Length: 95
Image (cartoon, rainbow, N blue to C red; front, side):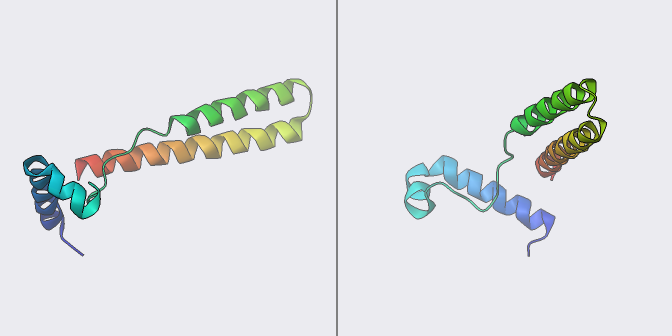
C-alpha cells in the first residue's frame, strides 16, 4: 500500500499523463485510473429519506404509531447513510 505522499504523487503523474497523451490513456485503460474521483452527492438517498419521513408522518397521523415508529427509524437510517457518504466524499477530496 502506498503512503499518502506516494498516492498524491501517483495521482499527479496520472493526471499529467492524461493531459499529455489522452489517446494513450484511452488505449491502455479506457481512461480509468487507480485514483477514484469523488462521486456525486447521494441525492437519491436524501430524497428516499424525505419520502420515508413523510410516510412516517402520514402513518402517524392515521394512528398507526408502531408503523410510524418503524418508518421514522428507517428514514433516520437512510439519512444517516447519505450523510456518511457525503462525509466520505469530502474526506477523499481533502486527501
